[in-house]
Length: 326
Image (cartoon, rainbow, N blue to C red; front, side, top):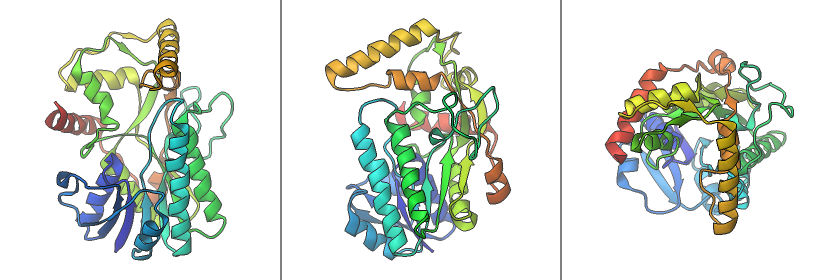
């Protein structure tokens, strides 16, 4: 079969492309320009040059394929870049979904657990957990634009689009070329970090998520949502495991409320003055203080989704980061 794929240079998209190619499928990927040959090495791929707003290029590519996987997105955990995030994550998704609907192609849209409810009282949320004021996500550029992208897909499902939506957790693993999620491990490897965030996340192996995306394409129910998460860990546990693998001492104390308050204020003020928002801002800091724990029971039951041992994931992710960026 032939699959149209967005985001092939990203962590998840690259792993999806490799798994499709390994099983004998052909990938047609849209790329913005010349791509490093190493990124596509080992993948049976044909590239189309353009971005997510190149309607004609996308329509022609999708028409030539059997199905669509949309994994590309801008990830910015902050208050700025909202317009850019909406342009890519919402409007780009609309172009993809409209083309898939016009060409009668099945589609998997990659959302994120950041559009779902947070864990409450230590209980992981799932696809059906009602979002309230107490478990809502921070409405930053990434969260708002990805939620809008899901709304776009569901509006096309109502018009007849055969689409499934998957929501990955915090992915780690090989082929993180930029890096994306691996930045956390990379920063821990660059120097001792004495403090840890007080929240937690659901750590999953990108290779397992890629397999889950393909399973959703093959077996997912039209219009249905599937969480593809993993081991629900505190950041204390995660950062300790990461630091050890990167040859650094474990963090010693949690980030207290006063430090969070001061860092949030400084980050937001700096963004207003310089016009450039860094990873230290009130949205990112608040998100790191929340428990992004989720249940993948539906995906396990309906898609056969499985997670390898999280220690193997951390080992492989650390090896990748060390060999490519340190």
